[in-house]
Image (cartoon, rainbow, N blue to C red; front, side, top):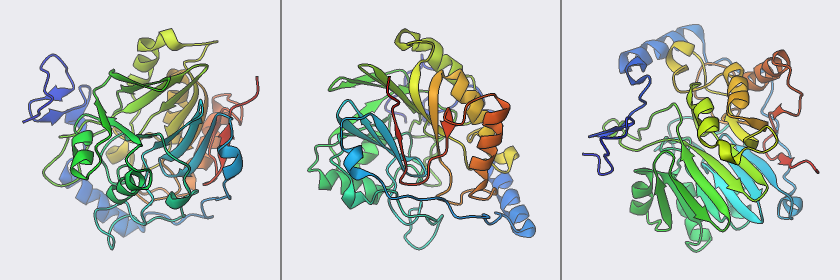
Length: 335
């Protein structure tokens, strides 16, 4: 039974949650096994031609007064907004897995080690998959900062965090907001799903985050297939739009997209991410969800190459949608 169930909401079910537009189109377990057999026969995933780029972070500058975003790896980004520090989907472990000896292994170390993080004010969790919600990482963050860090998560994910001993938690449904020291944090829809075992599919909600502060806005897409929710987000939050853009910066996933027959409904490819960048109303975007964990068939270094081609084809400037090296930072341009 879904303790949050609201029959008036189309993404709620008595047992959990669903994507109202395409739940019936999702790949079955049989489809997944067929994909894995095919990948083994064809020697996939393909090895990268070059390693994921990594640079030393500029910690002194990051802790200054500038608005910035630092790519720690996969979907983990350190945001500095209005003197506050936010962290998205923190995963610092060696594997994106419930096991320390099995599952997708990290190919590049985190851009900032967990023990080197500055004090984190807010952690945003987009959903419960292991490459986005890592038990060891969130518990260490909670302990390191004495329980002061606020964890903001979709419905059901907060209950899991509390079972892990994290009490400073706010749970949100789609379109609900929480105010924190001048930040407005709104959970918005994403085209995805959730599970951490074989018997809890879609028991926890998933989503993206819209972050609004005085003079700056940011969108964290979490994990999502391409869909109408990007336009819907821009339309529903239009009162925040400034100078032709809703968001000054978006964190947009570009990886884990092959084969399309399996991944299309819940992971964008780079071409779709460029469309989403425009449709959600982002002034600039940073690529996430690539280069760290080998989750699907494409090579780890392919997503940024395709992003560059898609960006050029769409007539965007190189700085409009960038794939930072791990440890690299985006700094808000001077006015």
